Image (cartoon, rainbow, N blue to C red; front, side):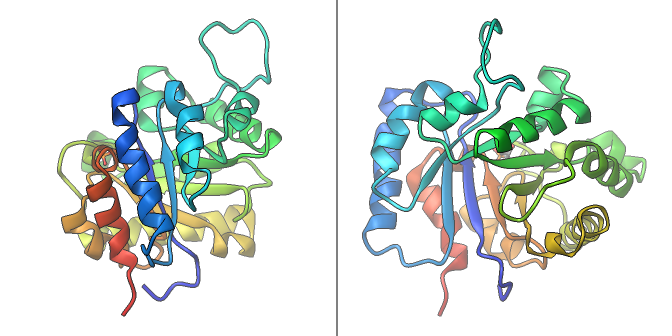
Length: 254
Ligand SMILES: O=C[C@H](O)COP(=O)(O)O
């Protein structure tokens, strides 16, 4: 893990977590405050109901909090939606946009994801833009084409290493315990890097590209050591402090 890009280990709690989950956040924040000497940035994206409370718990630590989605508008008559500005107000520094569960469950297109990324920037949040192929797309040999199309469609011009993180999540690897082979991860991440540079310019060489999909402490070491993998977007294993910290341990040096 010799990349000069500081890695980011991000937890996405999805539709999980209640007030009873707060001890896990206390444990994560406590570890980063007291002796968890690993050169990695850490982020937890709890459900919106817990965001302000998570911020209260974690704001004195190095751990940041983020949203899992945002609306495109700043405010207004959009029942049930939460704007990027509201996430920022609750303490968020990041927001995930275009997660495959949003694309599938809510029909979000590349165009919508692109608009949400720009909404995130408008509020001063870093956008974590998710891309990744489905099982059937992979079986048809379309993985790299899909990644190119998602980059061209979902990543706005103006994306920089400071305002954007890309998360590569093969849809079939999410929550299944399945992961791509290491050569497949390397190929996908190298392709994403090359396409980001083609579309955005050389500055994209510094952009973080996270891997997501069934990351756990036992496989983090080999997945996160792959070239152009600059951290992880972790679902299930981020719900337990010990697992989340176990994944971040992959970056321990010496
Ligand atoms: O956002 C996180 C990803 O969808 C990965 O989820 P997972 O770690 O439960 O497979």
